[in-house]
Length: 227
Image (spheres, one colour):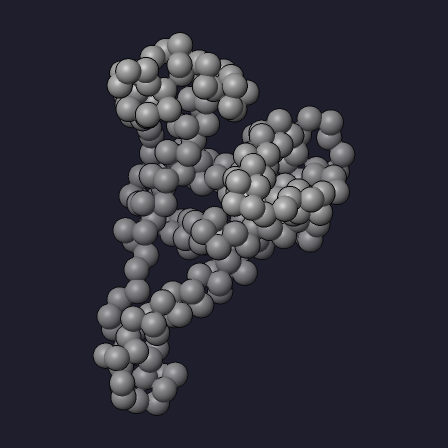
């Protein structure tokens, strides 16, 4: 696994950064090929992202915004669908990369998250009836579908955790960049935190721009989202 991460660290880093910054929302641009598919909103390699998944997460997001007093009209919903499709694509990319790297999420971990969730309890204890009812009523999912999605989410999180153990700004890198930009180390200690944050953001944005050219050569991404 480690040899895979080292060998492919550039592409892996860019995938992760794209997920965090959300710049994978290049829908309609050259990064994605458009088409018309009745039930599939997007494909990442051989994996489908369905309209059912997309509309469910979009409606969840819209509901959360409305609860905050934000008006969600049709134009906003179109924007939300684009954002949510980008997030689903990003998670699928990370999940596939995690599988390829040999990472795994055990059945025990999935079961633990479910059984310790307050949403699936009655009188302080896990209830299978409450679990199945909550999934059907709030998400429209079967337990098998929910557990598959939960596993994918945990895989993506695990992959990001491994990646960020590899990619950090070193003190020497920060000092060198600061001196190069400012011509001296004056006020370095005072400005270090803000400068380091800006440097990391710049590094991430640069990596992202390179992502689409390289990633699309390895895994084809198609979107079929209609306006």
